[in-house]
Each structure stands twice: as structure tokens, then as C-alpha cells.
Image (cartoon, rainbow, N blue to C red):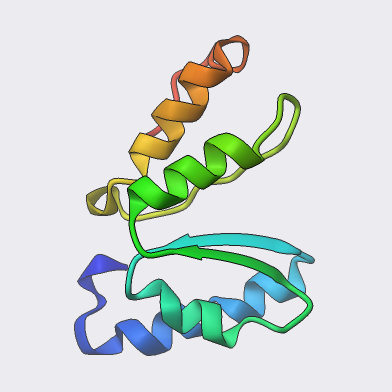
Length: 101
């Protein structure tokens, strides 16, 4: 998604449809391009938006509990792998398999 250039706003906003259709009710976002998705999601979707990965990382570490299911999707260049690493550090019992970062 980092490589979308002039199409980035539209492509990010269009992610709202598949997320809604899949029944996703909680979406956590970071970075300036994700404001387009944030603004396109329906009001009944619980959206957490943070400007930086560090801010979202702090939120995630506080919000996630053992046994929760979390999917992190991002371009490698955004640095969201730091969130994966922090969660695996906090919950080492769940890091039996090597994550793709």
C-alpha cells in the first residue's frame, strides 16, 4: 500500500467494504494514509486511530489480553512489525511459530 502513490487515498478507503462485509467490528489504524480508511468505516465500527506506530503500539499493549485474536496487516515499511514483536514479547507462550514481519 505504500507504493500506491496518487491512488493511495482511494485504495485505502475501499478497504472499508471488505472489512465491513467480513463482520470486522474493531479496527486499529496508524499513519496518515489510514485516515482515508478511518473516515470510510461505518459509525458502528470501533476505530482506534493513532498517528504513529509507537502510539498504536502503546495502545495495543494495553488493549490486548491473553487469548485475544489479533491480525496485523501492513506494509513492511510502516514499522508495524514493532507491534507484532512487542505483543510476542508480552505474550511469549503464543510465539511458538515464527511470525511473518
